[in-house]
Length: 308
Image (spheres, rainbow, N blue to C red):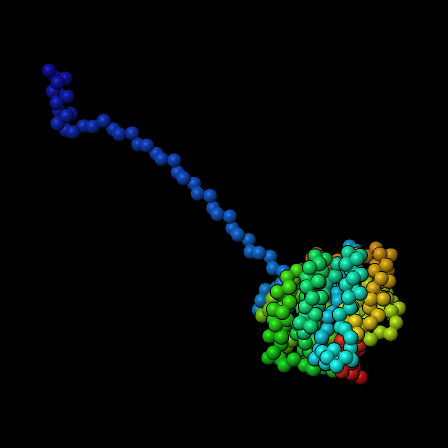
């Protein structure tokens, strides 16, 4: 009887059997991989900052950069139209580079590209060739630059941007390297290029090939000063640099004898260090506003005299 009473009391109080708690397994969501920003073309820098200026790469290893400027001024276009000049595109240089499988970097003016679209396509189609910027019409960016007409300061940014846009449709190994005509630049010129995110490339080996009458001085000028990491300045403009194709085989042979190997400019600069770059920028700032008398023949055409 007592047991029955207890059972009845529990029933009246609503006692229930405890319900077991079921813990659901926690779903762990793996974080999505962070997309790395695509690397820009060689020479690309952060837009809005003053572009670095380089004269050469690291002085270690065995690589050197052969660079060829493709100048084109209004005076040179006039010479072509009137028959005073036959060609400002030296195909023999390109033939030799292709035959020997030699890498090179071509600094193109926009007007040269427009005058020689087929040659530009040929350069772009070669995986060993890089394409770089040498202004639109080879005008000066400082007041005193071998007599070249000057780009107004307000037009400097647009001039270089237009050249990049002119080269871009050809594809190939595009870069953000830029070379001033005559290597003439100052603080104002560098500031004007800050929005474009580029690297200014001067060079430490001046060949002296424009208007040379013999090839031997060109060869001596290159081989007497070239070192690991050097950036050699040559021209592919034929009429204004008629001896370059004759000098080039001897230059290549001399480089081999010295254990030096031509490489794309981006490869020569790839292992650059901040310390070395800082030294080169300091040297460049010291040089800003100056003109190098030895470079006069490099960058003047027949319509502009070198200043005394």
